[in-house]
Amino acid sequence: MILVVGATGSLGGRITRGLLAQGKPVRILARHNSPSEELAKQGRANTARSLIEAGAEAVYGDLKDRASLTAAVAGVETVVTTATATQRGGDDTVPAVDLHGTLGLIEAARAAGVKRFVYTSTYGAVQGHPVPLFNIKGTCEAALEQSGMEHTILWPAIFMEIWIGMVVGMPLMARQPISLIGKGDHRHNFVSEADVAAFAVAAVDNPRAANQRIGIGGPASYSWTEVVAAVGQAMGAKVPVQYLPPGSPAPLLPDEIGALLNGMETFETFVEMTETAPAYEVKLTTLDDYIRRTFMG
Ligand SMILES: NC(=O)c1ccc[n+]([C@@H]2O[C@H](COP(=O)([O-])OP(=O)(O)OC[C@H]3O[C@@H](n4cnc5c(N)ncnc54)[C@H](OP(=O)(O)O)[C@@H]3O)[C@@H](O)[C@H]2O)c1
Image (cartoon, rainbow, N blue to C red; front, side):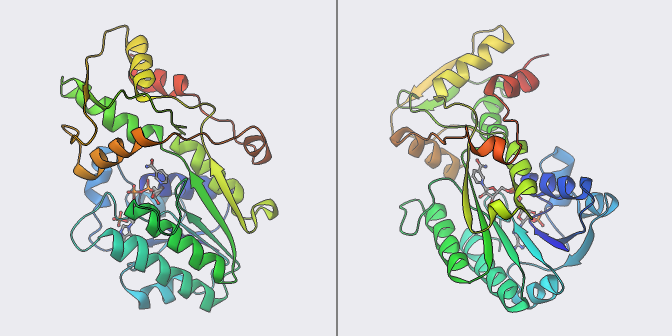
């Protein structure tokens, strides 16, 4: 039995459906009164019911409720977690969910004798990182490595669907200029969320993935200026852009997204995928494929 925590989320849902499509037995940790019920109407989440209809069994619980985690991991061989509070709110804070909730889940899984724990971190996460989420992810990675459980750490770069949707798609829909920070010229290795899900599914019971940290990026790195130019080309229209000084908030975007956009102009990412993608039999989505699919027609 594979327990997916975060299954009602965007990436978590793709992983759950991918595992079910392979005929694997999947249990999901679902929440009563989950925000995913509303978010699913906007295509931003999956209802627990839709996953149950696809073949998953559900246990009800919450990462903030340690006892519910003990019940959820009972009889489970593999735990996969993608859960995060970054797109939730209220009591679901990043420290409560991403840090303490994940640490509680690792401990519950270890105590229950779970064989493998697959943790969704983020590329570049490390304990002591100045960005709180990257520090938290690094802290959970360290706890997992010290747990003695066999583990796989997914280390994906920035997701095309989420980020290009917010930074480019949202202003376009609102007929506002796209806001970029600085010169928007630092290159990042945008990866499709669908490809990250494919890696998770391929890694779940793969001996090659045992005790590995798997860097996951797209086929090439692009700057925001290049991304916007590619969208304009696909749409056959000039896309208005305003360049804001470093430190500026990004109009239309939540503060933490604006902060990360600022951060992205202080470093670059490139993940070498020439061996990893064929090893896990994942065909990487190109930026052009994603843009054509999303912004044309
Ligand atoms: N976006 C990027 O560019 C990027 C890059 C690298 C790594 N990542 C990582 O990739 C993952 C993205 O996953 P996603 O797209 O599926 O996230 P998502 O759409 O934001 O969904 C979050 C999931 O976490 C669950 N959750 C939140 N609080 C919870 C709680 N207290 N107890 C139990 N479950 C809780 C949610 O359940 P409810 O539906 O019930 O709220 C939902 O299933 C995250 O770990 C993120 O850090 C993202």
